[in-house]
Length: 199
Image (cartoon, rainbow, N blue to C red; front, side, top):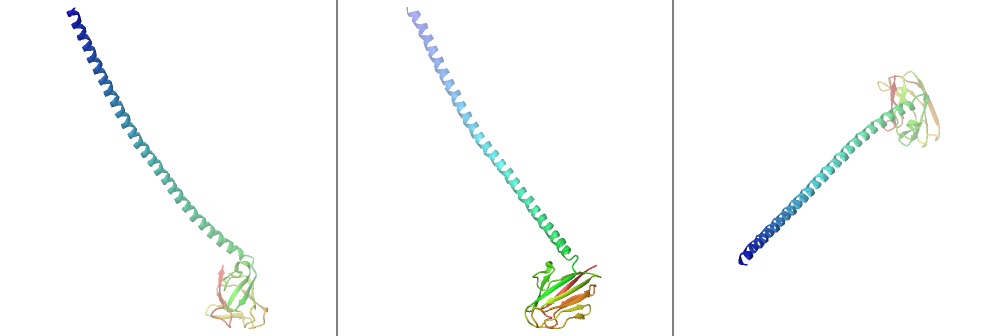
């Protein structure tokens, strides 16, 4: 009886010890898995943030490039508009035969063609060898006249001086490279404009 009981107790003790060791081993594995999961989660968060930062950086680069391209396009558009304006102004003088100025106190104001309309002391673009009628209308009832000047400060042609309001006076001029200015003989300091002669 005694011999039978002792081995059984030993078996039970051995089984209990084995069960305790297994439980501790399983608990240790579970703790290791939790620590591993937490570390991976932290790494995942860091990688995700870095990925987001990289994506945001790429977006910033794209936006910067877009702005740069936009600036170049605007500069190109401005240059094109300037070229078109120059061409338009040059075309506006084609087939012009009459040029009309108006008096306005102490300045000339362009009336025709439309390219000089409302411009003070406008530059008159003429083609060498062509003939033009250049005149003025007295708008302010002050004393005015129109004189054409050439190289060497030489007066080549001039109208009479008049103060009669709404009176028009005209000169016929053949354009050449020696034409320089048109003036009012009464107000030469302020009523003077230039000729630009195209060949």
